[in-house]
View 1 (cartoon, helix red, strand yellow):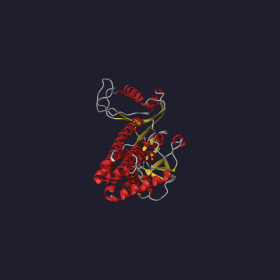
View 2 (cartoon, rainbow, N blue to C red; view 1 turned 90 degrees about the vertical axis):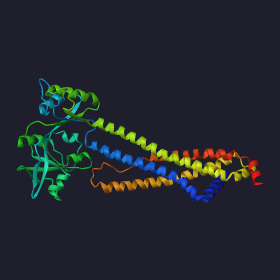
View 3 (tube, rainbow, N blue to C red; view 1 turned 135 degrees about the horizontal axis):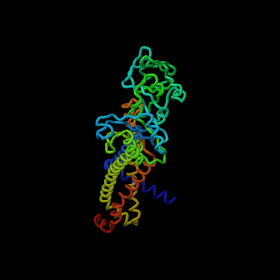
View 4 (cartoon, rainbow, N blue to C red; view 1 turned 180 degrees about the horizontal axis):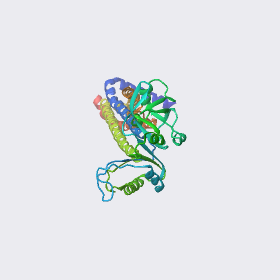
Length: 421
């Protein structure tokens, strides 16, 4: 009970001191408010940017690898000449799957040479028609919003079933429900069985594509039976870096280009790219933490300076208190609690403003990015980070009050009383 009474008296004294110097206290506390505000907004926005950027890869299986054939830049005596285009075929992919135990699934796509006019009633659009193998949509982690995926029966019976994107649906069908409708592709009727769901940045790359079973495309249009890109999902225990090197060497031997020709193949390793981006954003987070802590440190220095001024102004009062029996511990208590109170009050204000700032940021991001695909995702910050920041703030307030409190506690009553006399 005595402790509560004593604490109440100390708080009343601290409140009176702050009230007497409102402008000075507000200007000092502003540094604290600004520091915690900046820390929350920067970290929250950084998390939003990280999540938005990494969503680029959410349209791919995390342990997948994609290989694109490019042009040969180094001629070999018994292989491809400079400028030759590297292409793959089903026979090569079958050999790959037998050769590498690390490959769980492999997928390919066959495209018609040019954009094709796609017609539904009076609506026409120009889109890429791609014949895909059965595992293709699984590897791309694409989801169906309406209808269904291509199934084994579509492939076995060479059905002219197609899957379109929401972008294609909006152009061809407007507000009409597309599932079960037939569209014309170079005079041939195809039935829409599914509409792909948007929601990742990678789906932007798919929005101009129309997918059919590769068996149906090959028998209907008879294009060249080779392709420039294939993908593979690897088993979880496969070391991707090692696999990539072995794959390059094998393809160089099978196709006939130089092992030293790094430009002949473009290998996209999804796992390594995600890892590299995570490392990049970890570095950005570290920088943002340092920046925010510097703001908080400046606020702590400001509080220390203002408390030194308070001690100097109240030197006589402190001397009288000590002459009347006040202990050094009580003087410490008075100064530290005042510094701590300023820190906590303005720190809480800074946190509220920080969350409000995140709300404004999210509103601006939503207004500027009308699509579902957003490179700047909604800003968010974990509660434990806010709690950790607040604890650091409280400790900063205690530290900021220590030196002024020590100086106040060292005031000699005799000297101050002689000046009063």
